[in-house]
Image (cartoon, rainbow, N blue to C red; front, top):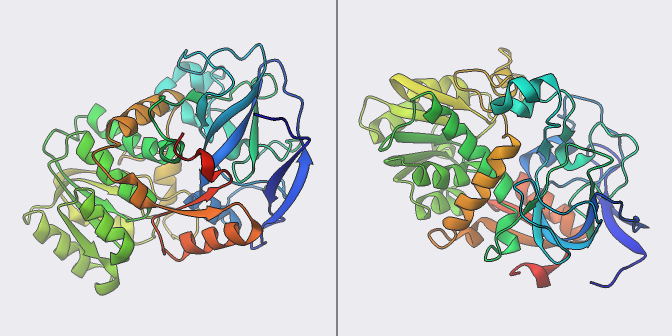
Length: 387
């Protein structure tokens, strides 16, 4: 691809700010670095939390958001020869990079590798948080993104399968989060083939959790969420056996009774919270059968003023089961499973595409926040989506 002297990026000055697109210099690519053209990047619930001021730590505003990113390597240094899985890397390859990347060297990574997402010095969420001197090319809402393993050794890059389109590659990271939650339940012998699963939340994670549950052996999947269109309807199209629309049922006993009736009275084998709503935990536990398993992966901030600090179940990765994101080794599992399932589910119906402009990014944020779509995706290069 032809080199350009300037790269357009979207930056935000703080919570509630509108995006401003500005030009920054194209960086010189270091020895163990790569610069890739962003084809598309999703709008995550984490982005919405950050823009709403819910992030629990100080942030180095202004910076560029976006971490559900997929693109094509434009330029690569001589020292970056292979991806994290050992696949060779060259200019022109399709890649994705996850937002949560453990260093692989600290005590936590060495002694607790299955929970290395609790790394003591991670490269974190879009590579911008906690790195005060970061260039603006560390977030996916931009024309290009930069990664440098010498500057940030914890950085991971994954080459996407040749037959996997880039628009689908943007779903690899959120899909992996769902897989890890169910995998943790399997490892504890709490999620067996044929299990009845209830998913709380019908946002992007909830919809992908339907796919993950079915691909990993669930017998029946029920989704509790809203709105009917487009979210619950898509859950059923993806294989959910039933849905409960929370817009038509008040919190508490009515929702619990509706779910228990759907799953046969005893309750579900597994309930996974993907909603982040304060009422989800108490309700979800009552949707379980006795001896069932609750997987919490929707709560990571104090948004909603949960008096019991329920979000700590997720962020501390503790057993109820709390499931916080993923480890570096999980990502490849997510990529492979998503690619394998690409013709069994119409994942394109999940996405609503928005142009890379100040107006387009604002519209994408609004559509995601107001649940007008399942997954809002910002597209700097629509011509690359099918690559």
